[in-house]
Image 1: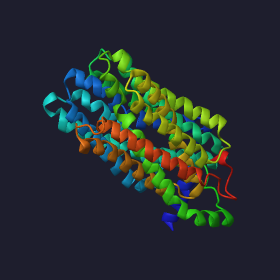
Image 2: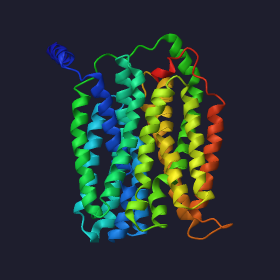
Image 3: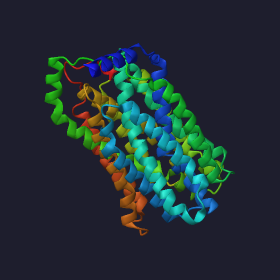
Image 4: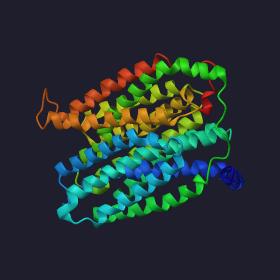
Amino acid sequence: MIESVDLMQRSSAEAAAPHPPTWLIVVSGIVALAAAMGIGRFAFTPLLPLMLRDGTLNAAAGAEWAAANYAGYLAGALTASIFAGHPQLGVRLSLVGIALSTMAPAWIDRDSMELVGAVLRAVSGVCSAWALVCASSWCLTELARRHRPQLGAWIYCGVGLGIALAGTIAWLGGQQTASALWLELGTITAAGTIIVAAGLGRRTSAPPPAVTPAHAQLVAKSADRQWDIVACYGVFGFGYIIPATFLPAMARELTADPLVFGITWPLFGLAAAISVALAAHRLHGWPRRRVWALAQGTMAVGTALPLISHALWSLAASAVLVGGTFMVATMAGLQLARELCPANLTPLLARMTVAFAVGQIIGPVVIRLLGTGTWAGWDSMAWASAASTLLLAISTAWLCRDAEPLAGSEPTQGA
């Protein structure tokens, strides 16, 4: 009896606690994804050429760092469902982990840089996956509770903004050591964590939205459609990873000036942020599968460009096309998942993130297995890009074949 009274008192106190305004929910989602993906997941991409320049890392160790991050991201995707009932806790823990693992390379001595750095990249990968799943689940659900689901698309601008920020810092600060840049990015992540903590609040503001029997039946009938979006999301992970990992390094082969080769990554991130904003504003009424198909098809063009011409203009265009679509594909895919599983989004998000993580691991593995030789005039990176282009085109056609929303489901602008 006493326990019941205590529980009722705690529930009343939590219900009376002030809840963050809607705009702060959106800002928190943007900052969380900027820190998690733009810095925790992708900061290594623009910093790798600078670490090679400084002599703190060699190309083989750089590949190991990248592989460790991919493996960590897969592990994080596999374990993200532990936060299914507590996504806010997952966001907090993941952002703290990203801040610490980003700062730490600044304090590692060269003798232990390869091993300890790989471990840190793995930790950052785990935390990045947790943050993406938990921040998406929390923000989309919370905005739906507040009857403002159309605002959910805007949180994905954060990934592009984070990439652009990390890339710009590495670009303009290219005369600094890479260690100093790691510390700066980690400090920025720590500041972002404080902002997100304010937006998370103490608990959600209302019970989950009711799912009508009619919609529940529609979702049950659509269960067999989940495998294909998981597969297409895995293809997306494989398709984007080659340019997302190697564009700055490819540009560095053409010029040694960091103010020239470094511009590809800020372009990538800026294109991602702008494209999500445009999609949220102009395509909110489109079926999510159609938006996803448009993004995936455009990405296929971007992965094909370096095959046509290995010049700075083609690499810059590839950065814009791939950067301008990979977050639209992410946004549309995760919003489609919420249409299919409105009552409990986290498990499907986790499965999609696992497929994505597997896809992005396969990309560098294929390059490593093909080695340094050439076949029919193409090296391993060119063949991996060709495979990416083909698979992205096939998945685009598959998404287009069934691009209408579920009959009786909520409007797509609420996705």
